[in-house]
Every structure is written in structure tokens, then in C-alpha cells.
Image (cartoon, rainbow over all chains, first blue to last red):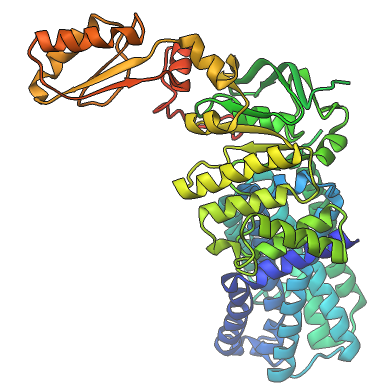
Length: 254
Length: 325
């Protein structure tokens, strides 16, 4: 357990000491939130739009964007460990692979927690509050952490498979494409283009967004939350398993 | 179980799409010995170290480190060894002391024991004042010294140093040499050191193994190896550069040409150093005025040249062995 705590601490410390990694993951999502909520306010006039405040609708987006930055941050950190040989150093200690993986993932969660708390605070300060109340805030943070874990583990997997930071950076636009091809800007039933609506319906990111929105706009919606947790948890489970397997190959030792 | 500190028999590492990086090498390093593994880039040095430190399974052959089989008993091997691999494996965003804290903890040390061990090692490698600075701001020499301190945390009996001074300035190199010598002399640590620097092998190693293209081509003490070559070389630099061709013609009578200064002619004396006087007389007879005349004792580069037909110095093949893994 101490090994996990130490590696998690290292993961958090090295991330916090790179402002270029932390600041954009907080500032860019909030910047986009501010632009979207002022520029797309008229979308709330569409019949069937779930709220009359686009800010409330768009508040879900920073949580996903923050998680995408977590993926980049986790992947870059892991790739850096491979490229500098730090992973080899760890391989020569009695450290167990599972401890290393848990340490990395705990670091991702710590960064995710900072992001979630910041975005909730902004939502409370500038929006109409969280409809699900204080309990909803807790669930919102938990969902946000699950999403961060899912994308962070994907980033770690890519880094462990490829072994370099360029590959991690190369996947970053794909993550953003997944976000843009979701119900990010409009509810799915209000997307007019069939192909877009179909992609958004198949896209798990839509369900993550809708789970967060349900807490912010509507209150408690068991189905939306179940789908959101299932999508995020499912991706997290697959990505953690894949990253664990990639770590076994990467940390070959007899 | 082998009683040698390191023993390898017919050790092979073959990469899927690459060359046979290590091609059946035999090694025996005695406890307390400093063994220099000398060879150019891409010769198989790092691949051998990765196999002996359990980071890379061999394709064939067997090896034991501290009596433990590197394949069947990897954990026991790792508990016995320390390693500073190529390129100091450090996190630029952590301080030197944070590295020590992590390394001591991963080796099971806690509290006062960990602090005392960290402080002692930081002092030993001269990094006390820089201990709380981030490693990203360290010089190459400081990084290498920290790397060494980290490798020593758990008091290993056998130390693997993979090109520990590559890229260092002469002062840093000399400081690291002193530390390695102290470790071997004071603590009886067995050191397996890879290097592409002849001088390093000459100064540090009790015995040297020369590896080329995956094969060990020569092994012995530096003196034994140089004695095998036996013959010194002479280098003459004419005062008038236009006389360089004639100088080369004269010297060619006394032995085969060897690499030397571009301003002069160099040959290995076929009759040994007794021929030096004849060389001087021959140059004088041809009225060639000489600016500089030097007699060079055989070097490990001469040994490498004699064994492989190529010079070790200036050989700049790209290191592909571990990357190919």
C-alpha cells in the first residue's frame, strides 16, 4: 500500500510541477464553456431543449474535456517514464506491477478531483446550482472521477503500447473528435442530421455527458446515471485491463 | 549454482527483426572484480547488461548473477544487484532527495533508516547541497552521480554500470571513476562496467572483455591484452606539410600504417621500439625535417584493431540493440 501511495504522490507532484499540463486542463474547458454558453444561448429556444440556460446545459462539457486532458497527462507521464528509463529503474526494485499501475491511476484520480471540484465550484458560482442537490454534487464528482479514470487509463495504455509521447499526443485529437461527435452541443433528439445523431447515439461520450446533465439540470435520473456510470466504468475496466497487459509486456523481467 | 559473481555460458539474444545482438558469449567475473566490457556502439554491451540485470530474457544460453539464475530466479538477482543503465533514469520534475525517498521506500526502508541511508549516499556522491533541487536542473555529471547513489541504496554486492560516463566532461568523468574505484576497493563491490572509452577501461578495469558484433573478441587484463599486440607505433609529423607523402613512404618501410594525426604518418613498428633509431636515420637520410616524433605504446584500441580490423575510436555505428527490443 505504501508503494502505491508513494507512486501516486510522485504522479501528482510531477503533474502539479508542470503548469503546462495542469493549467490548460482547467482553463481551456472553462474558456470553451464561457464561449459556448454565451454564443449558443439561443439554442435554448428550440422546442424540447431541456433548460432555458445554455450554461447549465454546457456545464457537463468541461468534465469530459478535463478527463481528456487527464488522458493526455497520464499518457505523457507514462511515456516519459519509458523514454527516460525510469520504468527500467522501477523494474529493478521489488515493486509489483499492480502497485505501479495503481499508483499511476491514483495520480490520474487526484488530478481529476482537482478538475471536478473546480468545475463544480464554477457551476455553483455562475449557474443555477446543481439540481440534484448536495448529494448530486457527490455523485457528480464520483462520475467525473470514473470518466477521468477511463480516459486516463486509455492514455496510459497508448503510452505503454507505443512507448513514446508522440503517440500519446497523436491520439489527443481523436479524443476530441469523440467529444465533438457526441451530444455535446445539443440533446441527441434535437440533432437534425441523421448521420450525426446516429454517431452520437453510439458514442459513449454522449451518455457520460447526459449523466452529468441529468444531475445538473433535472435532478435524479436513475437511467441516465446508470448509463453514464456503465459507459465510463466499462471503458475504465477495459482500459485498465489493457494498460495492465501492456505494462506486463513493457516491464518484462525474468 | 555458480560461485562467480557473474557467469554466462553461450548467452544469446536475438531480436525478431533485428540482428543477433549477443551471439553466444561466455563470461566469468570474480567477486570484487571490476570488469570492463569494452566495445563500440551497437556491439551488444547494453543488451548483455539488460539480460544480466533480468530486464531482457535471453534467447539462448544461461547466466548466473551472485549464483542466481537470471531466468529462473530473477527476483533474487535483482535483490543482489544495483544498476545505473545508459542515460540516467531520473524524473526531471522530482528533486534528488525525492528520488532517494522513493528508491529507499521501494527497497523496503522506512523512517529514520531511509533518511540516514539517503543522506549518507547523497553525501557520498557530493549532492547534499543540490539534494532539494529538481533533477531537471542538474548537470550531466550530477545526474550520473545521483543515478549511482540510487543504484547503491540497497547495498548491492554487484553493480552494473552501463556507459556511466558517456557525455560527461573530463572532471565529472574523473569524479565518477574515483567513486567506482572506492566502491570496489572499500566495499568489495563487483563492478560490471560497459564503456566505449578505452581510457576508462584501462583505468578502472581489473579485466577487460572486448565485444564486437555480439562476440567477445578478446579478454584479459589491460596489460595482457596490450602485451598480445606487443609492438608500439611511431608517429612523425613533418615540418613542411608538402613532405607528408614522402614521410609516409619512409615510414612504410618499418611496418603497417595505423590511424594517427592527419598532419603526420603513423606505422606500427614491425621490429618493435628498437627500430626507432632506424626510423630517425631513414628520415634524416631523405632530408625530411621532422616537427614531432612520438613513440606510442600499444593501446586497447590497437587490441581492438588487431582483433577486428577496425578502430574502436571513431566507430560510430548507431546503437540499435536495445531499441530493437
